[in-house]
Structures are given as structure tokens and as C-alpha cells.
Amino acid sequence: MALIDPLAAFVVAYIGLIIASMRGAKAYVSILIMILIYAVLASTPIEALNSLERLSDWNDARVFIYIFLSLTVAGIMREAGLLDRLVDSTGKAGCRFSMMSVPAILGLIPMPGGALVSAIALRRRFFEEARLGRDEATFINYWFRHLWVPSWPLFQSVVITAAVFAVDPLSIVSHTWPGTVAAIVGGLLVGWPLMRGVTCPGMKGSGALREFVESIWPLLLLAGLFLAARTSLRGAIAELLPGYDKEPMLVSLLLVVIILLLAYRPGPSSGRRVLELSTKPTIHAVLFESLYFKNLIIETGAASSIEHVAASGLVPAWVLILSVPFILGLAAGGENFFASSAMPLLVPYIAGKGALDWGLLALAYLGGYLGVMASPVHLCLVLTAEYYGSSLGRALRYVLAAVAVSLVAGVLILMAIS
Image (cartoon, rainbow, N blue to C red; front, side, top):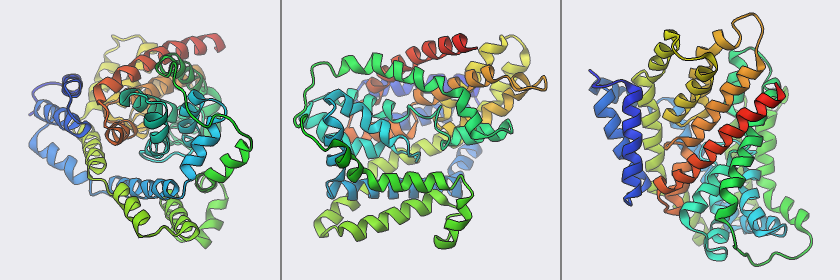
């Protein structure tokens, strides 16, 4: 039997993670402490075991494959010099612009833990050239990687939300785009001062556009394959690529890995470095912990606790619509979770009078998006923190500041356009 309500337990566990991280604990240790606190306070042994068993489900198991293949793509691109050329080409527009634009550009390709690709690309620029702090670099890479979640129809949260309300994904982003504008405002206000005074070499030169395209072609191919999976081309491509119709992301990643291997043929030493990156134990440890915690949140019924609050009628409707997705996104750290768990709960409020209230839907999506960004178990945050060796707690200070600014900006924008 649980000792306290799951949401109260999450708050206590979240505080435990912050304290552990601020005292110097590594990301995987901080997350483990949070899991242990939550498990003791809010779960039974059976729920804890069931959460572990869920990791063998294909939905969770394939995330490990996604991360392995994504890191392999990044590793080969790094060994081939493509990531350095990408950073250099954007750097010709300015050092700070380079640091923000690389994760933003790569953020157009949705994949679990995708911020690791931009983290790998920017490591030299952040630490050897600009000499930026690890916590600051973690925030900048993480935040700007996710600018497009409210405005790019390939993200899972957009697709799931569209399915919940029976509309097209393009219709969703045509109303939720203020979240992206708000995130840019929050990221700039918090991130720009952190990069004050940084300088990078190689800021001059011509041919930036050509160099940019040549450096990013594997990711453009991935983006094209991901986008095609949302169109009528899916079946035709599946004729050429078996399995694409069922697992387009997995097949696309595998195809790009094969093409990169054939194009650049990394030698034994390069191949070893690629393999060391894609199988790095601590990266897969925090991935395991994050997925397990997500399962524990689901198994212990955190969403039901929210539903009881909603049914009480004690909270104003607009506060409920904003806070329910935020809390569930914060707890599980996944955009697909807030969309699949919070949005169905809010259907009676957003579409209960026979017509869809787009303003309320945009408010709910903003809350969910920012809740996910604030989550201590967001894969991109914990993987970047582990890769850069930063303090998860100190990086979260910047993240939470940007979330607060973005929340205010987003609500103001929605009020202005309503």
C-alpha cells in the first residue's frame, strides 16, 4: 500500500533529485535516488516489479535501439568531420548563434534522446573554443533542441493530440505555435546572458550555405524519411524498405547508418570510437532509469490523482487545463505521455460543448510542453547532462527559469491572439 499520494510523492522525490544533484551526484545517481524515494512512498512491490517488466515491452525496448542507432549516426558523422563542418558553417553567422542554431536545426528531426546528436556536435565549440560551463552548455543544447515541439507536425505529442480531438496534426500546430515563440523568448532571455563574451575561431568565410547542406545531408535524409511516413508515400517506400510501414523511425535510422558506413568506411580506430559512444554504459543507465520511472508513474496511477482533482470542481477550468498536462509532463518527462494521458482527461473542458475551443487546446498543449521541458527525467536532459558531465540540479535551475519565462510569454501571446 502506498504511503502517500503519487503526486505528493513525486514532489518529494523531485526535491530529493535536486538536493542530490546540487551536492555533486552524477545524473544516473540523482535519478536513482529520485526513483527510490518515489518507489518507497508511492508504490507497492508488485507495482515496482510491473514497472520493470514493462521495459521488455516493444514500446520501451525499441527506445534503446533508437538511442543506439542515433548515437551511431552521430558517431560516424563526427568521425567523418560532418558535425564539425555543421558547427563551423553556422558559426560564420556568429558564435552564440552557432551554439543555439545547431540544436534548433537538429531539433526538426524528432527522435528519442536526439539532443545527444547536437551535444556531440557542439562539444568542441562549447568547451574547447568558447570555454562555456558544463551546466550552461547542457541547458543551451537541451532547450534549443526542443523549440519546435509545439509547431512541427512530426512530434508525437502533436500526432497524439490530433488523434484525441479527431483533427489533422497541421490544424493542431496552426494553433499551438505560440509555444514555440514563447520558448524562443524564454531561451534567449535565460541563455543569451550565459554566453556573454564568448568568442569562437573561424567566424569568417564564405560558402556557409553549401558547407551547411553538405554537412547535414544524413539528417536531411532522416527528416525526409520521417516526414514521408506521415504521407501516402509510406506504403510505396515500404515496398523498397521492408518494415518501414510498421517501424518507419527504426528502419530510417538503420538505413542512414548503412549509407554512412558505405559512404565513409570508418577504419578500425574510428569504428571503435563510434562503438564506444553508442554503447556508453552511463548513457544507457540513465535511459533505463528514465524509462523505468515513467513506467512507475503510470503503474502507480498519478493520472488518476489528477482526475480526482479535476472532478472536485475546486480548481478553475483554465488553471486545470494548463496545470494537468504540465504536472503529468513533469512527472513522466515524455511528450507522448502528457498527450496520451492529460488530453483525454481534458476533452470535456476543451470540446465538451460540441465545438473545439482552440484557445483552450493551445493552453493545454503549452502546459504539457513546458512540463515535459521541466522534467528531471526528460531523456534529452539527462543524456546531455551525463554526456557533458554536468550537474543535473544546476542545469535544471536554468531550465526552470526558461520554463517560467516561456509560460508567462505563452499565456500572454494566447491572450493577445484570442
